[in-house]
Image 1 (cartoon, helix red, strand yellow):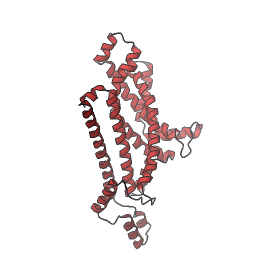
Image 2 (tube, helix red, strand yellow):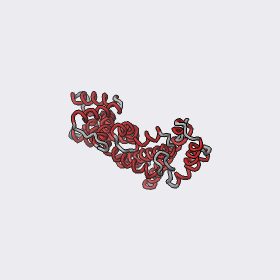
Image 3 (cartoon, helix red, strand yellow):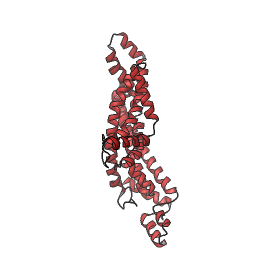
Image 4 (cartoon, one colour):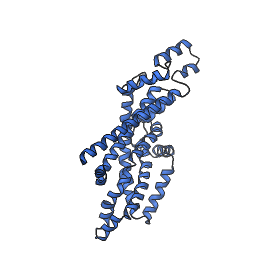
Length: 307
């Protein structure tokens, strides 16, 4: 029964992920379609021949009613056909897939570095909140969290240019990874610190301390295992933060990812490319949420029994 209940929970989470992806993609399509202007607007601004404008709109399907256009797009999505980009003149699906892999690589490395830095620091500051180290780390984390990502990216770019410590060449990975990882590490440190402090005051940890378990084992194993549960619950939000921050980071550092492609698609009013980018971004966020939920199930036996 427990196994079937767990399988049912996973299936429900997968179904919720599919619904989330479709809602995001459909919302992006409708918002771009209903917004003023389209891919032929630049031709109108440049006073092109009306026949050329009409032919362009017909070729891109922009002269069709909204319901017809939306219905055809939905049918295409069901067959993994996201339409054709008006800017690049290529099918959207392979174009988005290439950029999604780049963004996934960037976000994955940033998440690994942020986790390796943020969680241990959070455990230390949560276990000893009155120490000088906790005060210094807390101050730095709060400053970084309050700093807009674009400011932090420009600062790192300035450091790279003036010192040569980091490569600022287009396609270089170190600079955008650090720019994305640092604010996420600060956020994770704050979350883990609060969760660790709450876990240290819990009844189970106090009882374990009374049984004579060494403080290091108590802090880094027992309390950390308990404090990770709420932190893992927000990892889907963390990935969403990485994706939203990647737009600025990828644009400034010239990283060929999904964020910069999304910005180009919006500026060019590329309906199908914007929808495809939203679809791919939603898939990335939904998959990360699902992975975080499965990891929580693996760590917390009570969630498995509750399933």
